[in-house]
Image (cartoon, rainbow, N blue to C red; front, side):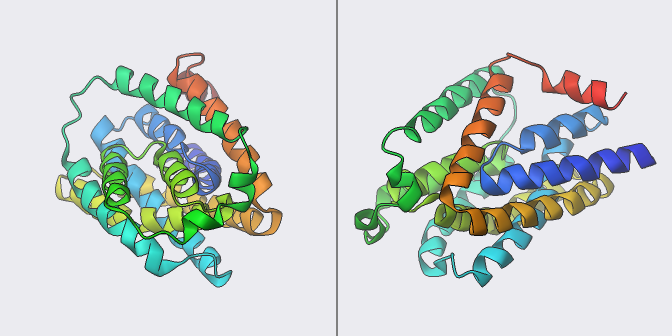
Length: 261
């Protein structure tokens, strides 16, 4: 591994760790970089899971110290997500990716729009919903989210945040705390599936993961100390950038190629 590649992996890792911890969609950067460096799509997908595990491990520690994770509640949602991730990681990748990306982009815009409609629900949560039991519908929803997360990971944070904020009534900081815990639980399972199929590049993954840890620590610190309004605007900005990429308004792969010289 050359020095320039190592630096690119570290810097991109910091950016991705920050984005993924506060919002989601940072894996667009990771996968684009890995593919540019010559990894096949399945190996890029598997390699990305190393950084996902490391960044969420560091984030969970900070959120836990600040007592922002209700582990009893979070685990009820994490179990179906873990089961879904096993199936997702084993799915064949011969589907129409372009169609999936465009549907995903539209969904992101819808999520962003909801953040401007009665924003106090996202800033302060909805206590009435927080006392409700986990319903069979919620279990199925988190199974589907885990299925998607195991399959590709890109943007799974948005789906988790939407389910936790709109469905469970949590504010964005508490929702982020539970989000990283759920992702931490299912990511090693998905990683194991990719490892079993020889689809992991450990050198790239670990170098990128070191950067992810730094970005995740910074993002978690800002989430705890700056609060939900800061998180909300980070999510809105990241959604705008991610949606533009998925809708073909700019080419992130070309941008990476230009930055790498």
